Length: 412
Image 1: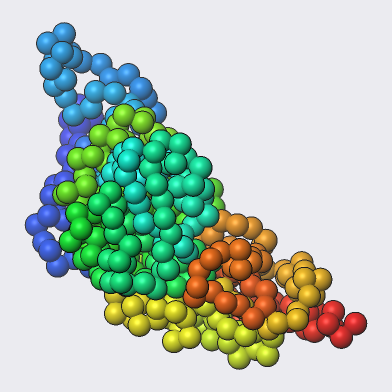
Image 2 (image 1 turned 180 degrees about the horizontal axis):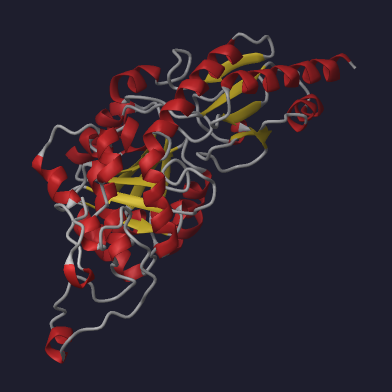
């Protein structure tokens, strides 16, 4: 509340948001999303933390500069807007700390380099995001770091793959494109018993639907480009860490100098306010559409973690609290690429685009046979679908018309 009639244009604002949030442990995550990262009292009463574009921070005296007395000392290291986003994200993830980066791939890179050195080995799920695989195969290997891939459904049997130089395990649930859900707690226990850290790409679930550090993950990676920002207009990466992994992550982030822009950090904080309501609506619509798709004769299988037919469904049911709007379908065999193109190209509401997590629905073809994941043995071609914020009835009608075009092409 802002007091009126304060002399000399001075205003007083009610207590710090962070102090209010700390007084109670009973707030729901929906409430936290409205208030984390906001300090109106520090910004003349403005509801949102303003954008701070700046590099140089001035000190009142030489002694203050030498001893770095001050909350901020250089724009690359910390600003009010980066501090607001980092602390808010760490709180959501129940982490010791978090850092913000200019893209999801940058976040993956910094996380990997924070816990690996020459001579180390990392075990990576075979269902991993393709750019992560490229990083492991083409970048880490140049610096003497070995990467080996494992069946995502291996669970505690991953113990058989450990060697003395295995220092980390990379998990992703659900798997990129193939949507297997891994047994994260079982893998984490084995990794920790062998002195290794666990890294996880948690972009699909976000900390709203899977709490990574409470399930044994040391470093949780998110492409904030997706559901955090939510409007397909920002590139953003985030990494959160537990107490054990935080010092090395903080130092690596500082040394590599990969900081996100102030404008993007502002947009990420703005997106945070509506993330829960967007995820809920998109997740519910996606599940309804996934069920509808499972009844279509052209569809051989729907790969949606909330459906029993998806590999690892039991782990999703046990460990996750929800599902987002991204899933895939396997089509029946002998459907030609021409028929699929006729179906997809004529869709009115689904864009053909690779990124997801925004407000718009998307669809792309993919070939999971190029992966060596043993749980992915499709009968036919595959389509990845992202459900946006359009009315689900309109989306179903659009897909239904697409299947008619597919059948017409087959008949011709």
